[in-house]
Image 1 (cartoon, rainbow, N blue to C red):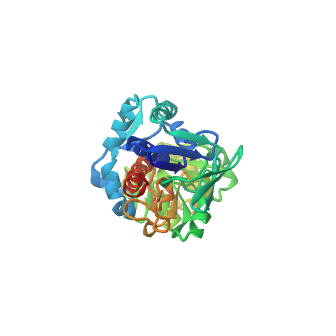
Image 2 (image 1 turned 60 degrees about the vertical axis):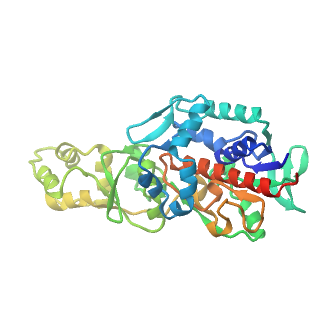
Image 3 (image 1 turned 45 degrees about the vertical axis):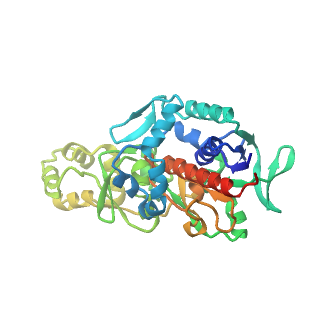
Length: 396
């Protein structure tokens, strides 16, 4: 029986282990943390958005240019496959109004427990607190609570995550180990991240408040999505959807009344104000909540008296960003193992018999089910590639 080694017990690594075990191979999984899939469990605290139910073209478009190298993998283990896999683990699912798919339990722990039990029944052995430190004489080296350990495998799958949320296991330290082996890497960058804003003291009372009923306009395209004002800047789903363009230098403007034209908003603002304060006039005439009024004052003070000029400002309010929040705070990361560094089976060209999967690879996608979908898909693909390698190369 061939021996397979998977390093990293997140969703990509566990999926590779499952595929390899199903192919009849002995599988060991090495995880640096005391328990598997910590980032997966953290995602599960907010509902565990497993995948997205939408037409194939729209689904692929979320991966931008990396939809091309990912296409075959996403076809082989796409949204329908993710759903069937979760349901086979005894987890009923539901699809929200936006197409996002969640477990009915709305958390990740029941799914992970069922998955680990199935892997254990298949003979997969998971080693905890085994931190990979590289290779020596072709064998993988680990620091463990019992001292250094060496494992020699017939095929290895690396699924060590990206470079954010280091406390959950994805610290990116593997990059130096692979670079030393000649594996081409793309520099890490934050994805699905917040952005810094130098707020005035007047905004402090709004920290933690969601901004609703506005559109984020980036590169001429309006995106409807809620985001949050924090002491550090702006963050949340609406921001994450446009984070890539903002990270690359695009400007952000807000349309505080996306359902109204400039003329319609100006007409509302032209109504007699009476003895109402200007802030109250904005709330009553334009139906702006206190947060949108605060944003308008923050970025456009002094506000013009002319209703049309004010309407134009409210429909295109510039938001000066001071760059993305630090890499470790990002939900996910861009960068990692360059596509030129792996073959069609995700095997490292510099190290035959070693495969890479998950966020280690250089792809990014917005939140909304796309991140986990690609982790599952690349994990399954790397597992299949490793199984094919074992069949062709492992000793009898």
